[in-house]
Length: 335
Image 1 (cartoon, rainbow, N blue to C red):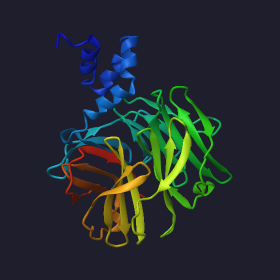
Image 2: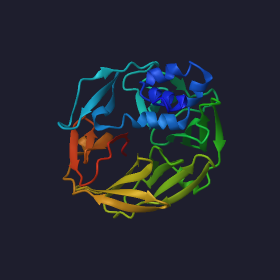
Image 3: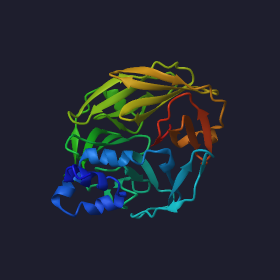
Image 4: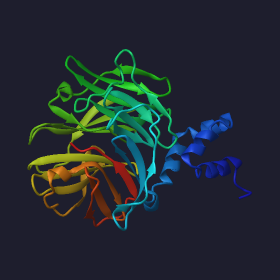
């Protein structure tokens, strides 16, 4: 230990602190503020929590918000702890749209306002402005949260309105919105296409874009967060039989997609993106029919080789997988 540089020792100590204490430590000195603000520190600090014994699920139910530990062995939850909303809200009002490194982008459904919120530190920031930026309409808009090469946290907001179609970027550092060009097919901004929330991976924000009807066009839109250029790549080559859905997840900084196909009996394949092409990792056994009232609407996570699907009613289904454990947790939204 005596041979280690003081910078390394401080780094090792600080990355073991809880999130609230990390935030307080930024005020100690300029050197600590710079160290704790780097993307490397954020990534390492977050990765320390990615173990199966430290998984948590954030549940928003009517007027309350709670965090519960996940007990993998019994497919159940431990005792909940209440999280107090630091902002005014109404009943069943808060929707989570995107997440990154513990920071959430949420929408207040009664005012359509976008907010950045850290549930651990309770800090939040309203993104709405008098000139109509920062307002989100469900089923029309899409949002992605990301961090650029300068460690500036940003929100990409794709707005689809009658007569107003545009793409906007919010910068946390300068606290303002600006318009950027959408350089790909304009029809993707049509309400006939459903956009997923953005998934940030390797300097790119990814969205699935699918037409509303069976057998329609399905693509993946890529947004390079540093050049701010858009491009599109193909969807995994899954059969267009019945409903086709794709859920993007970042696993150890590699983009994966759970692609489900079928109508009554669903088949789910796991794909990984290599370059601009999809490689199938595994296929799950067909899932027997599940009532639509129970279908997946909140989240899924992978741990200890099993894939757990949570339904609207909070019930957990288990899908066994012949694979190495990812030891990670990902909130998602389903169409």
